[in-house]
Length: 135
Length: 135
DNA sequence: CGGAATCCAGTTAGATACTG
DNA sequence: CAGTATCTAACTGGATTCCG
Image 1 (tube, rainbow over the protein chains, first blue to last red):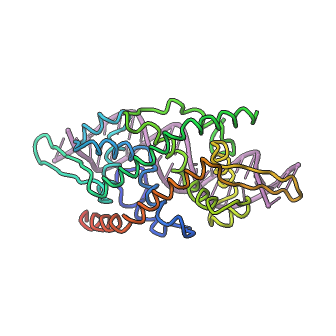
Image 2: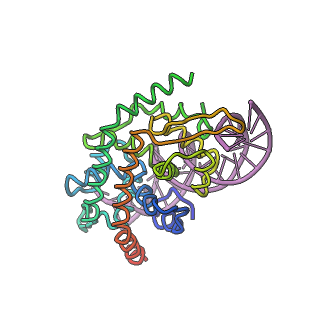
Image 3: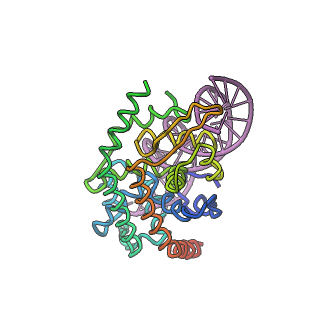
């Protein structure tokens, strides 16, 4: 199949046998495989603000390439987290908006962001101290 | 430097200029860079159950290699999420336990896991339908 | 505009062998 | 036991080009 291309189905479809799953973890990996990548969170956060067109998303998220935006939105679409509406005008117009599930995800993300802000300094401090000690 | 080795300091130290950060995102990326990898969550979840030795962790997390366990625990240690105690016995013995910050992270992870469990089926369903439609 | 198709560099993680 | 040190396969993401 080969990865790194635009297709989404192949690579995500393969690891259905998700792997080891002690008892507590079950499922977290699925979410992390979704939001753990480089752009998904940024797209979700942007869409949490409202409906966005492809270009608007790209402009709102500096640095994202056309390809990565396509891949990211498609994966979210595929998982039912984002709704995709195509207006067959010329030039074409495609709108993205969070679904109900997508909105609940964006809230979970916000919770994680809160944790991050709260402990950011503690982590940075620990890191500095560690780096200093390990000469 | 070169990555993929056992050293942890280099690669994590570089991206201090984290990148684009609209306004809402700020910080989430830090957390995701930590827990978004393949093993961190599993290690944290296991340590949430109590103190563990290196070998115990490895046995509790099927599939993790010695190298990845070393890298994962070290990063957590470096960030002050995990405490590492060495008993210079023979054979050597090293204990890992979550710090206070680490415990709060494990709760945040649990929240994400809850979300995951709640929406797992919805996502799987959406995915199936999508795959079916996109012949 | 909204992609799709290629090509390519950097990073991550697995396998293996060796050490105090 | 608890790591280190290498080497290598796999995957992720960036740049570029082309298309309806």
